[in-house]
Amino acid sequence: MDFGLKDKGVVVMASSGGIGRGVAMELASEGAKVMLFARSADKLAATADEIEKETGNRPLFTVGSITSAEDVESVVAKAADAFGGLWALFNNTGGPPAGGFDHFDDAAWQSAFELTMLGYVRAIRAVLPHFRSGGGGRIVNNTSVSTKQAIDSLLLSNVFRSGLVGLGKSLARELGPDGILVNTVGPGRIDTERIEQLDTIWAEKAGISYEDQRAQSQASIPLGKYGSPADFGKIVAFLCSEANAYLSGQNILIDGAMVEAY
Image 1 (cartoon, rainbow, N blue to C red):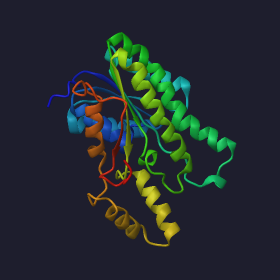
Image 2: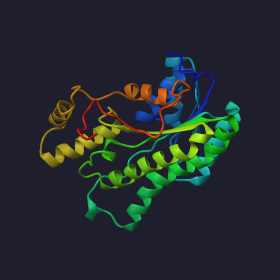
Image 3: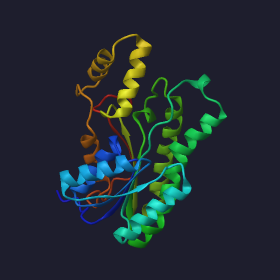
């Protein structure tokens, strides 16, 4: 299937590693013009080298933080200028700190809001004029399976990522007449540094080894394994593509059937 992504301008947030890098890799393999964005210039350069080596399509990159309104506006403007327009946005960020209710003061709640919610809002606000002038576009917001089933010790993530589902559904209805499709994706156990960190925390709480925790976690997934960033990226590439002409307003869990809720 031709996804129709060749030469389409796409901004991929938090893309120096993990899920973001996996998404950028798949988009580049489909011929998209990709702009990477993250805080580390060294990691971004290494990721750009890796993507070029694998796909023959070198992405551009911009250094910045999703919590900075100026940085978010800058990366979108640079991408639109370099690519002659924009077609898609993959909104992504690292998760807020783990912990329960008693762990967090007002400053922690505000920080998590700015990281997990407001950064996405700013990125969407920045791309919309380019999408509208180009006749449409695609927005995919990355969240978590916690939008369907709360995850213990991840209170801040549970709260704000669930709010992003409401944002996505609302924007899908509001922006549909402009030809802009909006979807939310929720990764389960995708094999990244974040999952490694969480497995370490849960192993310590359970008093078991990291290896035992990982084995138990994989056994809880009907497919019997963690997903890869490439598994995740292929689905996002479709959602960002012209081939996706009618799927909008959905919250899609990419979790190997781990979550029992529907």
